[in-house]
Amino acid sequence: MNQGEQVKVLGLWGSPFSKRVEMVLKLKGIPYEYIEEDVYGNKSPMLLKYNPIHKKVPVLVHNGRSIAESLVIVEYIEDTWKTSQTILPQDPYERAMARFWAKYVDEKVMVAIWKACWGPRSEREKETKEAYEGLKYLEKELGDKHFFGGETIGFVDIAADFIGYWLGIVQEASGVTIMTAEEFPNLQRWSKDFIDNNFVKEVLPPKHELAALFKAQFGSVTSD
Amino acid sequence: MADEVILLDFWPSMFGMRTRIALEEKNVKFDYREQDLWNKSPILLEMNPVHSKIPVLIHNGKPVCESLIQVEYIDEVWPGINPLLPSDPYQRAQAKFWGDYIDKKVYASARLTWGAKGEEQEAGKKELIEILKTLESELGDKIYFGGETFGYVDIALIGFYSWFGAYEKFGNFSIEAECPKLIAWGKRCVERESVAKSLPDSEKIIKFVPELKKHFGIE
View 1 (tube, rainbow over the protein chains, first blue to last red):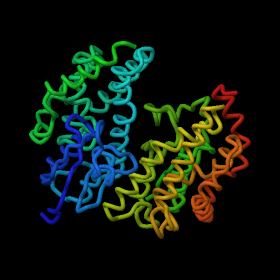
View 2 (view 1 turned 90 degrees about the horizontal axis):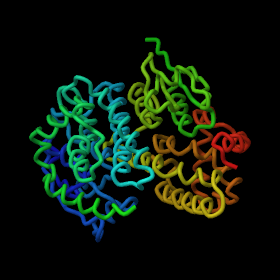
View 3 (view 1 turned 45 degrees about the vertical axis):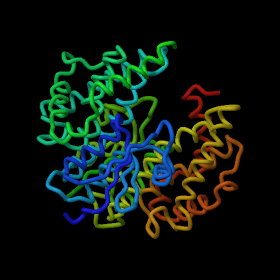
View 4 (view 1 turned 180 degrees about the horizontal axis):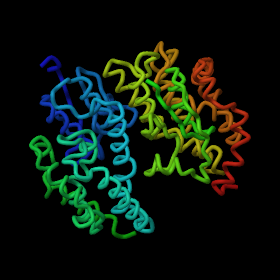
């Protein structure tokens, strides 16, 4: 492989954003060095150097040059390593649709779910409704397809990793249920297939550890 | 091949301006359709059911939503002229990073400069200046954000430039005093035909703000 040089990922073990990058690297068979960052505690000099603007993870460092923002990184990986496993379609219209739905997951659905579970109590009902509606749009967009990307995992599937894996654990820990098997049969079926994929499975954080993390976090916000 | 290109848009939208500029850069003829955002048309609701927002680009009957996604789409469909994104993957990633930064940061604080009062307004002004300074620092001594050629990041930001006069007037501050290089960049961009055709007059925006405030129920 031509591009087999230095690839580092600065990440956070429990973060769906961080995992997006690792999933794509695994799917494409690109070796990388993983560095866990103490983002909420002590940000390392390396993190501050490679992502001075946002000081967040994930950051990809390729031959000393850094890229930040998980979906930007995913597209960079796609552009840089031409492998048979592609994440985005070739057709410009299909690409625009994939980018649209990935953005929708990121900016609307995940945000609403977060606020529904963790936000101020006064807003939770409104956010739950928004999260539900957002998931309904995704349910419809997925339809009968195996994955959002069609027969194989694609850009939207990667973007929706939180829905595929984290959401179930968050719902259990918070007691807030937005996505049920009855109301979202397509997404339910998809999430099973998604997390069953060998490359995805390899990077997912252990369920019990995530559950413990969320329980601790939820435990601290029950008072409002 | 006869392309049918329709743009559902709203004249003061800094997001709509991006798509107008991209189409002009590519010399694509398009049917501009002004939308009433307080009385949304059936076509808008049909073509963007998820967000019901403008701009919506309809190419041969198929809608593309979200302005920066449209800019990239336009670049991919009409690659032969004025490339908007760099071909190098790293440069392209940097362009997208800054487009994302502009999208996430500018509008929220800018809006407070005309839409808020007192402390909230002051905080908005301060934050906007910080954000513009960060962008100015990224621009550096380059002609455009992409270097020698006008492109994606310039397109992402230039619509806001047409609103600077309004921010300054209603916020009672000077952006030029704080970010002279950015203002110089704005003036350079406006010299481009695609930008001149796509940006409304600053004065028109200033006149529009009170009307906008009424729509939002702000005093």
